[in-house]
Image (cartoon, rainbow, N blue to C red; front, top):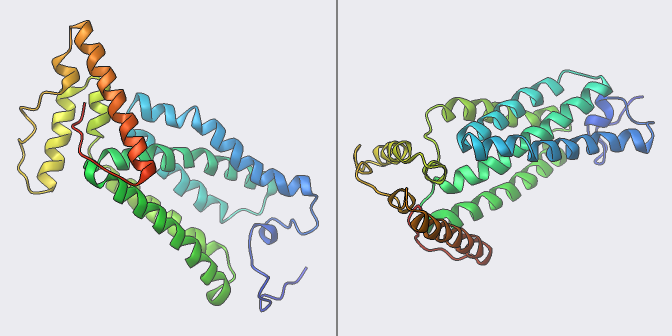
Length: 243
């Protein structure tokens, strides 16, 4: 089948690459379903890695895997492989987006988290606008749209090696000394010195060994997190110490 790419409604996408023009609705729908199944599986695996072994690892697995799989899907015309790759992209999205979102906000000052989160959503909206403009007036080939995902994903994987773990996550799992090291690294990058967090004592650390104080500290952390979620939903912000 030949296509007229001068037609404003014709683009070169997965339909043409995998020759699905005459495919059944079930076969077409299976590709999209593979993505959703990948998200479901990733939500109980990669996200668990982010909670158990650290935000940095969970995010790194997601962003690296998505870059590799996106690159591979550019060079296959096999339908079954396409379903597998789309499943893996959905799987990796949970690490890049879900764990990465927590990692991003936990690395920001409380007073900036709402601004940063809002900026991310606005930027995502502009990406969709840019893609629309690209297909309308620049090029009809979908491969070029995937290249930024591959390139920025690989760059992100490299630079992630230089990033510290989330101090908030470290405190939540009782790794207080590592949390201080992470905060010191952040402070150093921001020109605040290299030992500013050495004498930090976190509420949960102070309560360690005392069941009653640990319970109070745990309740305070949950209250603080609940307030953060409410503020994020309502567009407000305030400063709360890591606990």
